[in-house]
Image (cartoon, rainbow, N blue to C red; front, side):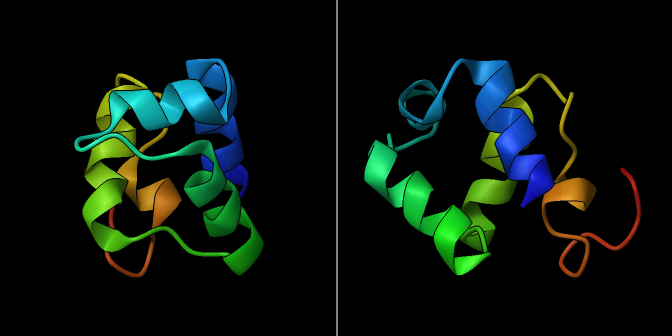
Length: 69
């Protein structure tokens, strides 16, 4: 979850990251992802885009995206 935490930091917080996703995600949902230790697969590319590629899909979910893209 270090990659997600970096994405949160880059975006300026959980709420701001959530606002950048489509559809937007509530802060509590992002907190739940951290607690559960996984990110919904449909959100991985959105988070990559929200960070302008500073956090890659491979970093967020290496099983789904086994190689750096």
